[in-house]
Image (cartoon, rainbow, N blue to C red; front, side, top):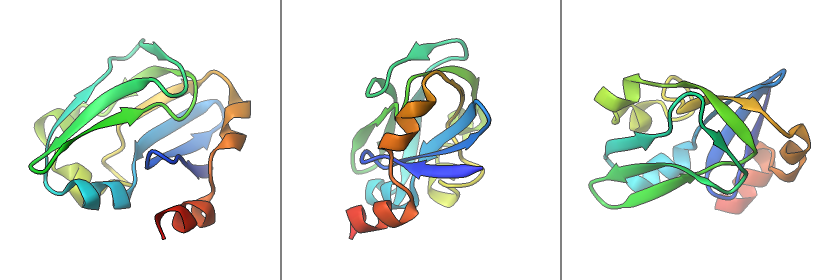
Amino acid sequence: MTTYYSEDHEWITVDGDIATIGITKNAAEQLGEIVFIEQKEAGDDFAKGDEIGVIESVKAASEIYAPIDGEVIEVNGTLEDAPGSLNDSPEGDAWIYKVKVANAAQLEELMDLDGYKALIG
């Protein structure tokens, strides 16, 4: 599996043509205490750059943007009742979506971990 990062602070781990998407630890720290998440539903299609959800914290609301084209095949339903798990395990158990990758070439436009670390300084 390979992990990529977007400039919008999402991570994406790819295994074959299935990708798991979530927010980075840095994003979770910047948001503070997360109290709500709005997610798409399984079967929803999206294009790279589309808003695919909203995360609300006690400090702010932040959109989740699609790092690639795809189709939602699974939503992490535990986040609905426990959105704070995004603070506890943003790059682990608190993934947001599993998606079918529609255009694998778009992965090349994303950053590796070193590139992401350079972005956030």
